[in-house]
Image 1 (cartoon, rainbow, N blue to C red):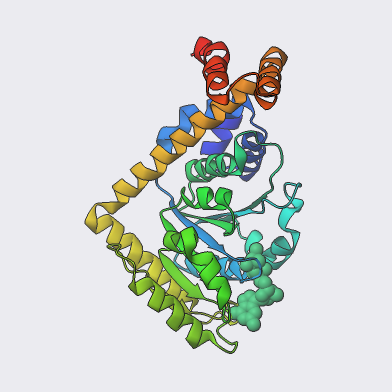
Image 2 (cartoon, rainbow, N blue to C red; image 1 turned 180 degrees about the vertical axis):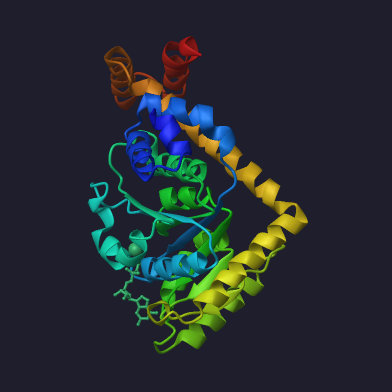
Length: 313
Ligand SMILES: Nc1nc2c(ncn2[C@@H]2O[C@H](COP(=O)(O)OP(=O)(O)O)[C@@H](O)[C@H]2O)c(=O)[nH]1
Ligand SMILES: [Mg+2]
């Protein structure tokens, strides 16, 4: 059987293979995705983000177990952009998730920052498509919510779960710009610790200022003790219902797709700038002249565009 057939027949090893291939920008893998794309779109994608150590992996593990009791299948993509190694990236997570990784209804995959010209978010969105085509009902994407590329990853999601911990204090102030807005549901994890209620109050106060249609709920949870996890998942489902009933679901998928297409074009153009040595020479030569003030950067860009990009399109 071909890889394509194996994937749609639910062969787990085909999923693993496909994800490795898309991570490596393999041309044939994208040809398969082109053919099978129409089969995707059925999985509900949940992004889990928040600071390192907040308990995202622990919570994901518990959420996955809960969803399994509902008879649904789950894919998990754990993204660690700080690690150069795929697979080894989140070894700790793997160990912690060992229970669920033995479950045939669960597929877990770690992704590192290795290799992508297109950036980690493109590799991740391709991996989401693979899991979607494979037939997962839910897909979790766990990522450390600190940088822009992680925010981009979250733009692939239907619901974004923001995991906070008690006593963030000033950190909340630092995080809130840009990052708070992407949370659809908030979890105050480690609510067994002091200050959980206060953190919940602070986050609620902040969310009260938002003018968005959807007011994100804030749930206190203790992932390690599986407390509040079912309730948290209910809130994800409430958000899903809200999206579906208001027409925002299609809108969000449209927005996500548009964002993805624009990002892909950007990466394609950057790729075109670098894919052959003569082009790199042009880039180097122009950079040199601009740095030495022999040329202005605006003219350089026009030249670059005409010489390298335009002739290929
Ligand atoms: N006290 C307490 N510790 C927790 C809780 N949830 C997770 N942890 C611990 O916090 C640490 C980091 O958890 P992890 O899931 O790896 O965080 P991640 O980096 O956000 O994925 C681990 O030692 C967990 O056992 C919780 O609800 N309460
Ligand atoms: Mg983790």
